Length: 171
Image (cartoon, rainbow, N blue to C red):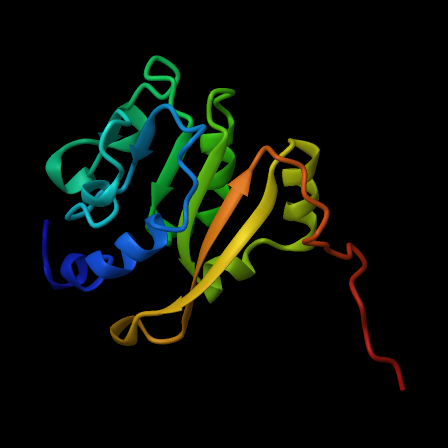
Protein backbone atom coordinates (compact mmCIF):
# COMPACT_ATOMS: atom_id res chain seq x y z
CA UNK A 1 0.00 0.00 0.00
CA UNK A 2 1.40 3.39 -0.98
CA UNK A 3 0.97 4.99 2.42
CA UNK A 4 2.84 7.83 4.15
CA UNK A 5 5.80 5.54 4.92
CA UNK A 6 6.09 4.57 1.25
CA UNK A 7 6.13 8.21 0.14
CA UNK A 8 8.56 9.22 2.90
CA UNK A 9 11.19 6.75 1.66
CA UNK A 10 11.11 7.72 -2.02
CA UNK A 11 14.50 8.75 -3.38
CA UNK A 12 14.56 12.41 -4.43
CA UNK A 13 14.75 12.41 -8.27
CA UNK A 14 17.50 15.06 -8.30
CA UNK A 15 19.66 12.91 -6.00
CA UNK A 16 19.11 9.85 -8.19
CA UNK A 17 19.99 11.86 -11.30
CA UNK A 18 23.19 13.20 -9.68
CA UNK A 19 24.25 9.74 -8.48
CA UNK A 20 23.55 8.17 -11.87
CA UNK A 21 25.59 10.96 -13.44
CA UNK A 22 28.66 9.57 -11.64
CA UNK A 23 28.34 6.07 -13.13
CA UNK A 24 30.37 4.92 -16.13
CA UNK A 25 27.83 3.00 -18.22
CA UNK A 26 30.24 2.06 -21.03
CA UNK A 27 30.43 -1.63 -20.01
CA UNK A 28 26.87 -1.98 -18.76
CA UNK A 29 24.61 -3.88 -21.14
CA UNK A 30 21.38 -4.19 -19.07
CA UNK A 31 20.24 -2.41 -15.90
CA UNK A 32 17.78 -3.57 -13.26
CA UNK A 33 16.06 -1.47 -10.58
CA UNK A 34 14.58 -4.06 -8.17
CA UNK A 35 12.98 -1.61 -5.74
CA UNK A 36 11.78 1.01 -8.18
CA UNK A 37 9.36 2.97 -6.04
CA UNK A 38 8.29 5.96 -8.09
CA UNK A 39 11.23 5.55 -10.47
CA UNK A 40 13.77 8.12 -9.29
CA UNK A 41 16.67 5.95 -10.47
CA UNK A 42 14.87 4.05 -13.22
CA UNK A 43 13.59 7.20 -14.93
CA UNK A 44 17.12 8.60 -15.04
CA UNK A 45 18.90 5.58 -16.52
CA UNK A 46 20.68 6.42 -19.78
CA UNK A 47 18.79 6.09 -23.04
CA UNK A 48 19.95 3.20 -25.18
CA UNK A 49 20.64 0.69 -22.41
CA UNK A 50 17.88 -1.86 -21.82
CA UNK A 51 16.38 -1.31 -18.38
CA UNK A 52 14.11 -3.39 -16.19
CA UNK A 53 12.30 -2.74 -12.93
CA UNK A 54 10.28 -4.28 -10.12
CA UNK A 55 8.20 -2.66 -7.40
CA UNK A 56 6.33 -4.74 -4.85
CA UNK A 57 3.68 -2.03 -4.46
CA UNK A 58 2.88 -2.52 -8.16
CA UNK A 59 2.71 -6.30 -7.77
CA UNK A 60 6.21 -6.93 -9.14
CA UNK A 61 8.47 -8.70 -6.62
CA UNK A 62 12.22 -8.66 -7.26
CA UNK A 63 12.34 -12.39 -6.42
CA UNK A 64 10.16 -13.10 -9.48
CA UNK A 65 12.37 -11.21 -11.94
CA UNK A 66 14.65 -13.40 -14.08
CA UNK A 67 18.04 -11.72 -13.71
CA UNK A 68 19.91 -14.42 -15.62
CA UNK A 69 17.53 -14.53 -18.59
CA UNK A 70 17.74 -10.74 -18.93
CA UNK A 71 21.55 -10.79 -18.53
CA UNK A 72 21.54 -7.98 -15.96
CA UNK A 73 24.98 -6.41 -15.54
CA UNK A 74 24.11 -3.67 -13.06
CA UNK A 75 21.63 -3.34 -10.19
CA UNK A 76 20.94 0.25 -9.14
CA UNK A 77 18.52 0.93 -6.30
CA UNK A 78 17.57 2.37 -2.96
CA UNK A 79 16.68 -0.98 -1.38
CA UNK A 80 14.41 -1.41 1.61
CA UNK A 81 16.37 -1.49 4.83
CA UNK A 82 14.21 -4.27 6.23
CA UNK A 83 12.35 -7.20 4.73
CA UNK A 84 10.15 -9.37 6.93
CA UNK A 85 11.25 -7.34 9.96
CA UNK A 86 14.99 -7.96 9.47
CA UNK A 87 17.77 -5.77 8.13
CA UNK A 88 18.26 -7.08 4.62
CA UNK A 89 21.16 -5.01 3.29
CA UNK A 90 23.82 -7.73 3.42
CA UNK A 91 21.46 -10.52 2.29
CA UNK A 92 20.39 -8.43 -0.71
CA UNK A 93 24.00 -7.84 -1.76
CA UNK A 94 24.67 -11.56 -1.58
CA UNK A 95 21.41 -12.38 -3.37
CA UNK A 96 22.17 -10.24 -6.41
CA UNK A 97 25.78 -11.36 -6.69
CA UNK A 98 24.55 -14.94 -6.68
CA UNK A 99 23.91 -14.34 -10.40
CA UNK A 100 27.17 -14.52 -12.41
CA UNK A 101 25.96 -11.96 -14.97
CA UNK A 102 25.72 -9.22 -12.29
CA UNK A 103 28.95 -7.23 -12.29
CA UNK A 104 27.97 -4.16 -10.23
CA UNK A 105 25.43 -3.40 -7.52
CA UNK A 106 24.88 0.24 -6.61
CA UNK A 107 22.88 0.64 -3.40
CA UNK A 108 21.84 3.83 -1.66
CA UNK A 109 21.93 3.10 2.07
CA UNK A 110 21.94 4.78 5.44
CA UNK A 111 24.63 4.45 8.09
CA UNK A 112 22.75 1.65 9.87
CA UNK A 113 22.71 -0.47 6.72
CA UNK A 114 26.32 0.31 5.94
CA UNK A 115 27.15 -0.62 9.54
CA UNK A 116 25.81 -4.14 8.95
CA UNK A 117 28.83 -4.81 6.75
CA UNK A 118 30.73 -6.24 9.70
CA UNK A 119 34.30 -7.49 9.29
CA UNK A 120 33.10 -11.09 9.14
CA UNK A 121 30.53 -10.21 6.46
CA UNK A 122 33.15 -8.28 4.51
CA UNK A 123 35.32 -11.41 4.64
CA UNK A 124 32.44 -13.48 3.25
CA UNK A 125 31.94 -10.91 0.50
CA UNK A 126 35.60 -10.96 -0.49
CA UNK A 127 35.66 -14.77 -0.43
CA UNK A 128 32.81 -14.57 -2.95
CA UNK A 129 34.69 -11.98 -5.04
CA UNK A 130 32.54 -9.00 -4.01
CA UNK A 131 34.32 -5.73 -3.24
CA UNK A 132 33.42 -2.19 -2.27
CA UNK A 133 34.78 -0.06 -5.10
CA UNK A 134 33.31 3.37 -4.51
CA UNK A 135 31.31 5.32 -1.93
CA UNK A 136 29.52 8.62 -2.46
CA UNK A 137 28.27 10.36 0.70
CA UNK A 138 25.10 12.40 0.43
CA UNK A 139 22.33 13.83 2.61
CA UNK A 140 18.56 13.84 2.38
CA UNK A 141 17.25 16.25 4.98
CA UNK A 142 13.92 14.51 5.58
CA UNK A 143 15.64 11.14 6.14
CA UNK A 144 18.14 12.50 8.71
CA UNK A 145 21.75 11.45 8.90
CA UNK A 146 24.15 10.50 6.12
CA UNK A 147 23.51 8.27 3.18
CA UNK A 148 25.95 6.35 1.07
CA UNK A 149 25.74 5.33 -2.56
CA UNK A 150 27.95 2.27 -2.53
CA UNK A 151 29.31 0.47 -5.57
CA UNK A 152 29.78 -3.23 -4.89
CA UNK A 153 31.65 -4.89 -7.72
CA UNK A 154 33.41 -8.06 -8.80
CA UNK A 155 36.44 -5.87 -9.53
CA UNK A 156 39.07 -6.60 -6.89
CA UNK A 157 39.77 -3.63 -4.65
CA UNK A 158 41.97 -3.74 -1.56
CA UNK A 159 41.45 -0.08 -0.63
CA UNK A 160 38.56 -0.78 1.76
CA UNK A 161 40.02 -2.90 4.53
CA UNK A 162 38.68 -4.59 7.64
CA UNK A 163 40.07 -6.24 10.79
CA UNK A 164 38.52 -9.47 12.02
CA UNK A 165 39.70 -9.26 15.63
CA UNK A 166 37.17 -8.18 18.25
CA UNK A 167 39.02 -5.56 20.31
CA UNK A 168 38.61 -4.78 23.98
CA UNK A 169 40.06 -2.06 26.19
CA UNK A 170 41.69 -3.58 29.25
CA UNK A 171 42.74 -1.54 32.28
